[in-house]
Length: 113
Image (spheres, rainbow, N blue to C red):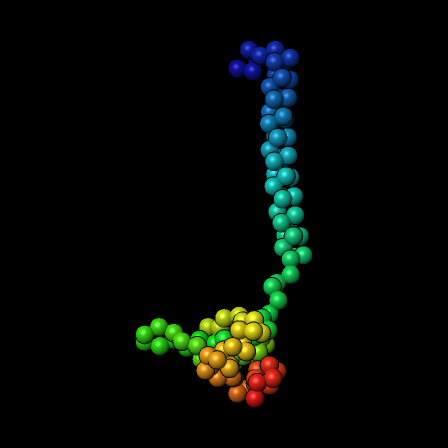
């Protein structure tokens, strides 16, 4: 079957195949460059800062309710916590009737005793 093609035709076919392969190689290179750039951006992205204050929530049969105010680095709040601002923590302790964690004592840091 290759006898039916002239040398020039065969060279054109080879050139077309090489152009196809070069296109695939270029697309693969671009994909890998995109992945590396995304990984570099992710490495430069800092995690969000830890909250200064947290509100721990207790799950009950009828839903969940606020349990205690904690400092941002307290580990006693459990997994169900919400971030709070300083003002929200002050209001929760003074007006909301929510207790302060007995371990991290956020009431001391907030000046509420």
